[in-house]
Image 1 (cartoon, rainbow, N blue to C red):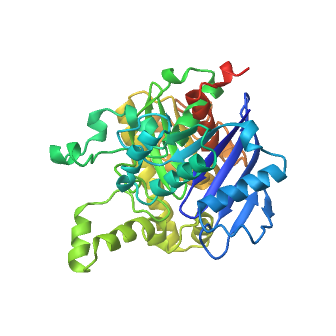
Image 2 (image 1 turned 60 degrees about the vertical axis):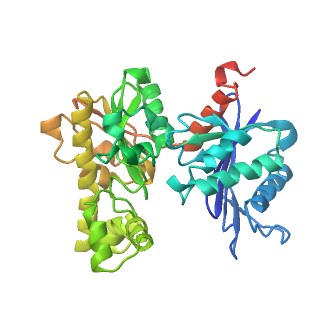
Image 3 (image 1 turned 90 degrees about the vertical axis):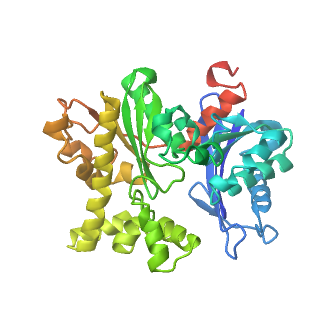
Length: 400
C-alpha cells in the first residue's frame, strides 16, 4: 500500500512516496518552474530529462508528468497501488482544526480561507483540485500547518483588538509550522521513551521561515507566528515582531501602499534587510571575516530566539527539553550556541559544545543540564503520511 504526499507551491511541486505499514520512503522529488519558461524535474538526486510534450504550463501538467515518470520507473501505478494522497495546506483557519478528508463541500469552505493565506493556500488547493480531477476515487487528505496550534487557549491566541474584529474577520493568532513542531515533539518523546502527553517542550523550527512553540503536556499552548507567518522570530526575509505603528509611519513618510509595506516586511526584511542577504552560511562566513552588518544580523537573529525561550519558560513553568529543527536549527551549531549562551547558571541550561559541533548531533546538553537540549531533523512529509493513514483508517497498527 502506497501513500503519496504532496506539497504544492505556486510554481513548484514537492512530493514523496511512502510504503505502508512502516512508512518507508522509497521515492521523492521536486518539480520547479511550473508555468515558467524553464522547468526542472528532480527525482531524488537525479534530474530527469523531460519530453517536450510535458511543458508544465500548470499543475495539471506537472501531475501528469509525475505519474508518467513514476509508472515508467515502476514506482507507482496510481489506479491499483495508491490508497491515499496527503496534501500540505498552510492555513486551516478555525474551520479545520485537524487533518481532514476533502469533499466537494469542505473544499468550498477551504477556498473561503484563501484570504488568510493568499500566498500559500491557493497553490495548496490547486494541488487538491488537480488530484481530485485526475483520480476522483482516491481520498485526498488535507493536513494543516495551523492544526497543531488549535490547542492554544484564548488568552494566547486572541489579540487585544475590538471583539468584532475577531468574530467577524477571525483576526487571531493561528501559528504555523505546526506539522514540523508536532513531528519533532513526537520524535523526542520516542527518543526519551516517554509519552508525549507527559512532556513540556520548547521547539524551535529555524530556517528561512522560523518559529518557536511552547508545548505543555504534549499540546501547543503558544507559538511565535500569529495571524500570518510574519509575526515572531527574525527570519530570512521576514521582519518578525515589530511595532505596528511603524507601518502607518512608513505609509505616511514614504508614501508606501499596503502592498508595498507587505512586500517590504515579508520579502525585504529579516536577515536580508539587516545585511542584504538571507543565506545563513554566507552570513556566517562574512561574520567570521569581520563584517559588522553580518555580525549584527546574527546577533539579532539569535537574541530574538533567546527572548522567546525565556518567555516560554515562564509560560510552561517546567521545561523538559528544548528542540532545534529546520535547516538552520539542524545545521548551524553557531546559532545554537549563540541562542543558548548565558542560559546556564540562571536557567540550568548547559550546552555541550563538543556535541554541538557534531555533524549529526542528537542530544547536545551536558549531563548535569536541568533542561535537555536536542537536535532533531524535521520530516513534515512523514508526519503528513501518518496523519493521512489515521484519517483513512489505515494507521500503522491496523494495516494488514
